[in-house]
Image 1 (cartoon, rainbow, N blue to C red):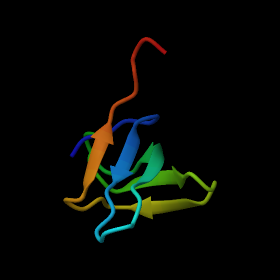
Image 2 (image 1 turned 30 degrees about the horizontal axis):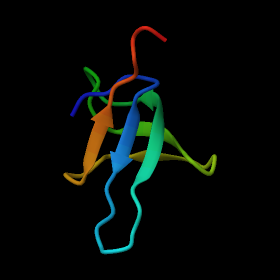
Image 3 (image 1 turned 60 degrees about the vertical axis):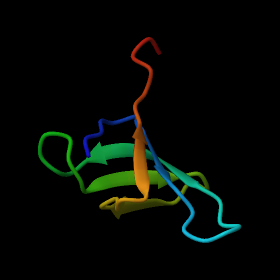
Image 4 (image 1 turned 180 degrees about the vertical axis):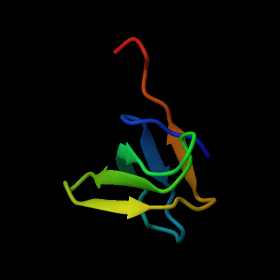
Length: 64
């Protein structure tokens, strides 16, 4: 997994009825874009995470 600042991490719900969570990468702590990442969740909370297999990266649009 590779991400850059501004990318979104989408963590898929693991059980029926659990919604996906979206976190914005605010800092890459690993080497070459790898985890761990400092992220900001939708509620404004910031944390450090090493995403699992239930997470996908939505790369930011370079035109923005």
